[in-house]
Image 1 (cartoon, helix red, strand yellow):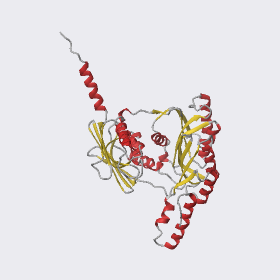
Image 2 (tube, rainbow, N blue to C red):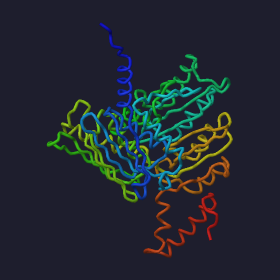
Image 3 (cartoon, rainbow, N blue to C red):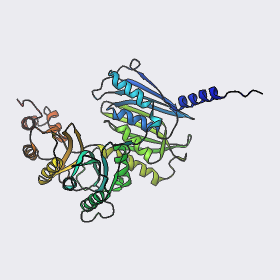
Image 4 (cartoon, one colour):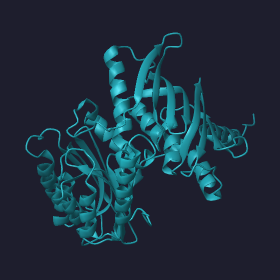
Length: 442
């Protein structure tokens, strides 16, 4: 009896499996007037929503609307997106990148940081802490290539990518790593933070901003009490209810829209081991309305009041911790050993507190963004900022954005007390001119 050759059937079966596990991505620029519509059809898999949202946010796209539906084993996500200017996507390279990236989300892995060592830090925040951290790294001959730092409720989390200054190679020598960790732990623990101060090194890392969320969540920043003035802090409305008919918990979030808002929320739900089965995302002008139907990874809805309150606190903290506080400063300067330590020392000497920063180096030029307040969380005096700019270099350090309390003065000029406010507005415009924000103040 002749045996049938099964190879063609096996090959077809393998193709079917690949097709089933590869998301189908459709990008439509005609069906929506003011946004590009992206549709993702895929096999349902835990975490796939986060991976899709991560791809879109990493490309600096704004998600204006969204619908998520997961029935049985299939998942359909629809997103209406624009670029940061609020326009449809017309750049073919961006569209192709979306198509390729979303088509491989099921196979996303942790990436290796080529030629760099990743250093993670958590501890109690205080004025001048980053100055001390970067001074130690400079003394130990570490070149800081990239870094992101978040602070929230008196806690700090940082991921710093390093090289050895002399060799330009990753820092892998155990003795040097131990020396760095010992010095930094002494800085982080201060006088009374021996237990919660943590440092760790790695070569392969997850997505940097997702890792920062995980670090602050593990540090339980959502339970902490702020140590600085937070009266001006934006805080969203978050509610959780149970839908007993469908055995879902329904999470509603209402607040100001901003870039990466959806990523922060989905990231937190995923890391808390909740699965999103259905969701609706709506934005209108500056407001955002998000609704999620979730269950715990074991299939159960939220079952107790303490669990409900914990979800509310964690989501609120995830949204707050990225919302920048203070004046935004941008440093663009030729990089050199110890540059960051010098800048941070100047901030500390002038009682400037860094609430958030993003450090990068490209082709030998440092591009750094800092959000700063005074030592108790209030806005920094403009004279202090002007003095710091003169010390560091006014052409290198520029004011990019002033906090809301300064912006209100100009908007209210025609209202009650207009004569006084016009005078204040004129003074403000003159200061903005001196800071390099305006071409003229006449």
